[in-house]
Length: 338
Ligand code: DAH
Picture 1 (cartoon, protein in one colour):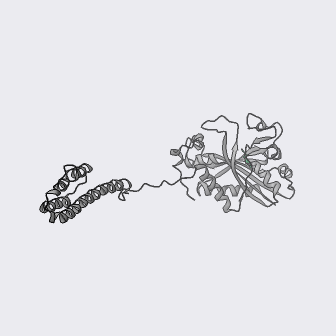
Picture 2 (picture 1 turned 45 degrees about the vertical axis):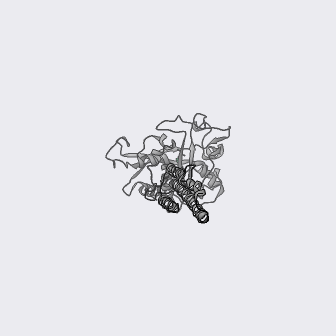
Picture 3 (picture 1 turned 90 degrees about the horizontal axis):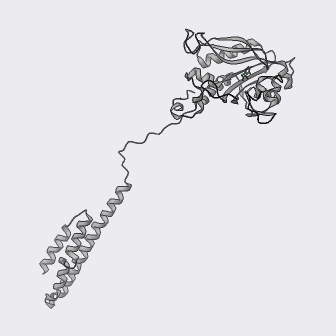
């Protein structure tokens, strides 16, 4: 009998399994009703009296070590399944971090600002919801000007509208500061246009204003030449064509030499070699007077350009709608250079 205990003990110690079913099977065949250890307990009465004490003690030890073994195997099973779920596999390649990109209009606006800030222009901003005085009247727009029509402008009341250009900020700056003034005003503007590839109901402009004593048309031309060379490259040329704006006299339209075909002729410049990029002119004395600046002492120039227009030329994007649809496939292609 004692030998039997020893043999069973060796079997118990040697038993190994990672399957719950096998462990259960083991428990039943040793500790179940007809299990090997249980049967030994049943044989207790056959043991001579003088050996009962030792037999009982050894049998109890065998039973508890079998139970211990079962618990140990079961708990290692649980640990294993738990660790499977939470284990991190450090050999898996990492997920790449996607860097954001700036909107192409923001990139071009910042490049324009950067050029002018190098030659001493400050940045001014004004409201997008503007009154008639700042958007039209102070800028010398006659009463019957078509821009004052509901068809061209989003009116909120008779006197309040979404600004149609950033020239309104000129008026605010001149009203609130004394010359010399050297500032640019970037911002969003609105026009009552049907949306198409070539027109949108909102877009962005950068306005420029320079007021001081003895400012000449030549000063303006040099500044604009410096600007276009900085933006489009040192070989860029400009030409000024006479034009009309209510707030400048004389007024001009600025063309740059075609950046795409280098004036050899292409369909972007319509084989003319020139691209129109902005309007400009000497600030009309009426506008200076409307803003309480003495036009006998001071003169100045102003210019205004469309940011989308410049972006179209730099990125060669032909459909204006792409700039406001927020299609990530489009937006992600643009990267900052400054
Ligand atoms: N405000 C004009 C427009 O929206 C652009 C412009 C032209 C601004 C001539 C100026 C300027 O300051 O001198 O079309």
